[in-house]
Length: 387
Image 1 (cartoon, rainbow, N blue to C red):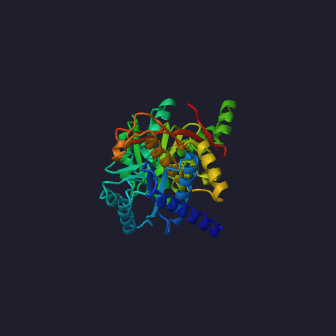
Image 2: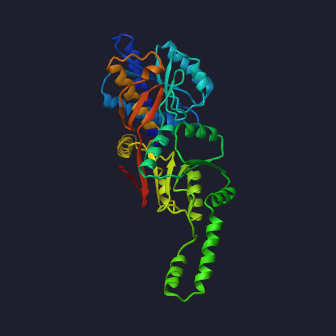
Image 3: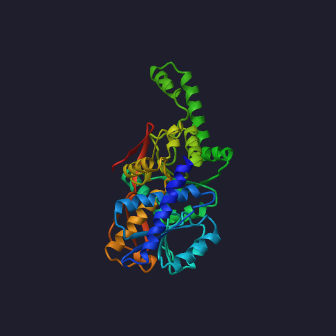
């Protein structure tokens, strides 16, 4: 199977390079797009998948005037600098990539190039970099709108105490959640459980239940007997001092938080639970602690169709972020086709909403904001919540 992938990738690179050679004697009305992706090293598969996604986009565009110039970033500073120098020499101005935000300072030195990075670490256009990833600001905007629609008044925002904590706090400040409070938690499961117990007043609620049960056990009143039967089905007694919770975490961190909330008897029937950074992770479907929660994300129908088409074409499932490479080609082509000049990253500012595979998004006021849908994990399935 790997040999098949290598053959397909080699064919794509030969095809791209053939286009480049053909440019020398062809019309000047050519759209040249560079691609900076890891085609070697640890993340080689991601780089290959980005190229495959771009190839699908080229097929849909169906215009031979679009030429792709892929270069290897290798997740290495020296390779990125060398690739950028080659882009300059070849007269390529707009580049899709890199996939992360690690080498922003190096990219800024090439101020005559424009990068559409697949990273989601910043919603703002900075210097010559536009990050098209699903940024946290867009997610929080969608969450705020949803919370307001649900008329929730007391929100707790949970996020891990790690190297991204300041980044999370900066984005939260951009969004006015009203009556909310921040709660930073430890990634150590033993410490985390105690923190969530304190947040939810678990021990007091547990004591309330035990005290009430002891009192009712002494009564023979039929109403007390009924209440006793009901209380024996519960784990705690008493209200929690918030009506909604936002969890800014993913993967195992998210699962740990959900498990801790379930342990402290936080009911999704009473508390609105919303998460960020959730890309329809199938592994969350087997999470047994919290059965129902909400999250903002890209268009699920489009994502499924894209993944299915990719699978049928290349025989494996793509990385989630590669759909962004598909949309990036479409965005660049739209500007070029409509004779909108792109001389700097700020020229991507556009008054209208743009429709992509991820859904609608807008680039204006030097900021990229995606219009995300709200989905619900319900009984083992992802369901769009239309509100």
